[in-house]
Image (cartoon, protein in one colour):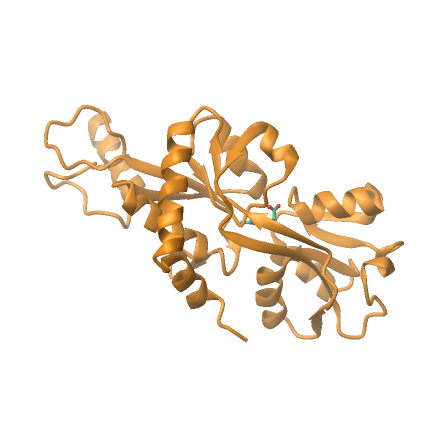
Length: 259
Ligand code: ARG
């Protein structure tokens, strides 16, 4: 009974990756001592799949730029990719506790984060922008003083606006989409969030616009545990190849059509 349960659990973990019960059953749940060769090690990516077009759920799968770049990197490393979805502020915790090998989450390189984790070379430029209602009197970040600002918890949008306007001005949400909903129903007057998800959220909601003047420019990179310098080197090498051969740009172009 216990064994059956274990097998079922392993199958559940592998759902969608492979059929269970064959001679390959349980392939990459762990890499413990197989003799049948061919077993690929698993590269575990932690993310928060509430961030289109970088990572989001579609047809029961996590897709997006980060998901595809990670798959291409895993491929180069001869590894099998597994993506674990969690709250944004749990991703670095998962990394530091060894539950994940990399974090790809449209994650901005910041000096504070660099104290705790290593970052790969950047793979994209990020922009913090301001979303307001179409009829809003807010025209730039200067007008945010005295307003209620919605952010996704622990993102750079949260960190910068908290610095600039104080804790009382900020309302934090688990998902960027929830912050945007709060803007639509008037409980916050602005949302500060990354440009590409902002575009997706504004497209999905009536009556919102993105201000022309942006709040900050930043860089996205892959976070890796400080102890894992070998993986950092391998990931950087793979990333460089994907940049050089145009794969990275192709992936980006598929998700962010030129305007
Ligand atoms: N770039 C911002 C940051 O690093 C927001 C990232 C949010 N990512 C996500 N997958 N929810 O703080």
